[in-house]
Image (cartoon, rainbow, N blue to C red; front, side, top):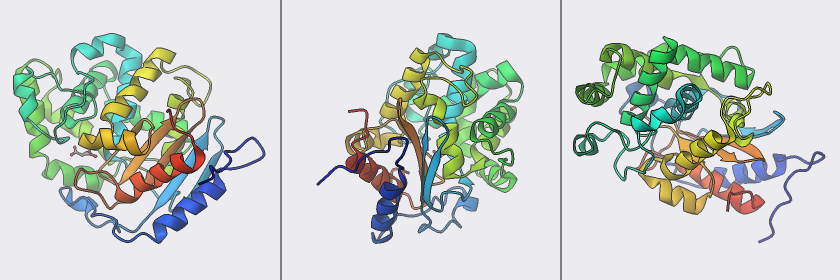
Amino acid sequence: MAIMRVPSSTQTFQPVLERIADEIGRTPGRGRAADYIPALAACDPRSFGMAVAELDGTVYGVGDWREPFSTQSITKVFTLALDLAREGDELWEHVGREPSGNPFNSLVQLEYENGIPRNPFINAGALVVTDRLQTRTGDAAGELLAFLRAESGEPSLDFDHEIAASESAHGDRNAALAHFMASYGNIDNPVPDLLDQYFRQCSIRASCADLALATGFLARHGVRADGSRLLTRSQAKQVNAVMLTCGTYDAAGDFAYRVGLPGKSGVGGGIIAVVPGRCTLCVWSPGLDERGNSVAGVAALDRFTTLTGLSVF
Ligand code: GLU
């Protein structure tokens, strides 16, 4: 199979996106929308959107690429970056960077690892990161929202209060994780305040275009859209590496094998991915597989790297 030419300044990613959308549209069986957060269950699993953003902010898209969806765990990448930018390596004393091999909301590992979560992308690890960002900023979710608005150039991005309330009403497991880590001294803020921040963080709605743009700093080796630096080059490498090894629940090995890019998924059906030095992607389709990754989303990214040859390998 011929590899499609990737864009120079006079070409675009548009043909490859349209080809992928056409293939996905002809594929039956797209998984099931998450139903453990009731407000997510209503999504149409056949929705599909995909966007690619180049380093200069040029965006290409197909399908429902401008439709806002529930970002959920994708936000864990941004809170990690925002906290790492502030506290540096000290963060890694409170959260690890190894794949967990367990479901994203598992409690079992925490006890025999003394309340230090395996990585920042399982829920326990994300709660630690949000807690630390909260201590440093006084409003972790607000800090995140401001960052996403600035990087996407979309000031209307906002929390979805219905989703946050729905998750709060069904949040016993996240509450258990937070209380358990607090008992080991690995949570600073009162647990109810932390959960409020975390549920609002996860509830932010954004489109594929918004998220592809907001992820751009990871393809620009730590540099934000306005040219200022958020992360050192080394820290940007660290975040990309943790995405590659831990970003897609306990299917990260399969995702790396199929797609070959740092990626982060969320139970809202979105996945962001980074081609360092080249471009960023976001794909959304709410139907999930049994591990919590978007079925059409993984398939679309798999096709993208196969058709363009743009992977990190
Ligand atoms: N807010 C969700 C939770 O904490 C996020 C899960 C996800 O997207 O992985 O359960």
